[in-house]
Image (tube, rainbow, N blue to C red; front, side):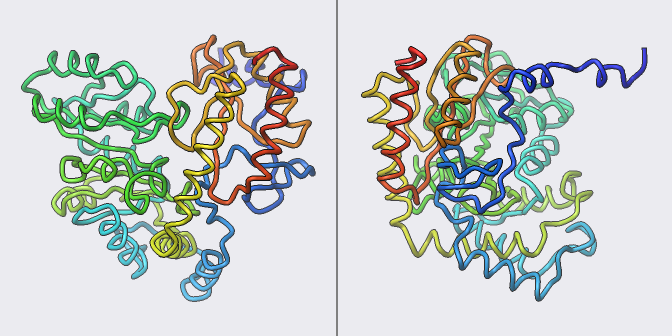
Length: 392
């Protein structure tokens, strides 16, 4: 049997394509805004992670253009050698101040930030403890680490304590999403921190979906609960509220110094491009200057949660701009995705292996820049199609 045989025998996606239910790699030929052109059709975007609507902000785009004009299109090397620009250092200083830590270090992607930090910090005799609904980048970082990964039931603090009791006295890092990317609920950080202190563990929070969303000025989950000082590592991405691509780790100076010299994902990756770096710097300025964006995001979120529930949709434990509609059956989920697409609403179906076979859902997410008219237009479609498919 050839190494490549598995590729030629992989037919699952092709079967779905042939049936007309393939929802991935859709071609968008416009800006990532509340409306997009997808596969040549104008659609209302209800599946973007641009929570504050900054991806096409004139100031963000202008900052990227100016950075290219000054620095060129790339750095042609890693941060460790020839790829550190003054704007990288400026951004790291601003990020550290923003989240309330001594220092920060930027990675080319959020995925690499998680993989790079976790795999570096968790050594041979250490443990990394993850929530079962943690993002794939957290799981992959744990799998790459020399230590052992243990998992606890989603947001179940009794389950977490049982895991901690098993390894009492051993070094452990608990890693959780601040806002869980599919469920839309918030990690129970106060109890996680309490248990970490009780069992001498450290805590890392992935703020990918909570930066720009939770806390004073959108600083994130740790700040939202007043637990920044109790959180050893704060991780964030630039691809959601910060309107670009990349990621960072913020922590005490000694921890960042260690990552700078030990994290293979940092040392052996080319550094963040100038345009991406500058656009994040500008997005941070706008977030600080325009707190009304976060207020509008929450107005839209609360409105949609209320309306979905009133229709009879099951939104689970969501209390954030990530609002899942729990459907259950996979074909019903695909049917809903296709029907909404036909009606001009862009959403994301979530099916196995991302969720168990009987727990399929439609993931919706909302932006500060959605208008009331757009939300109402989408709600009309959700109601009609939900009834048509006997979901509500």
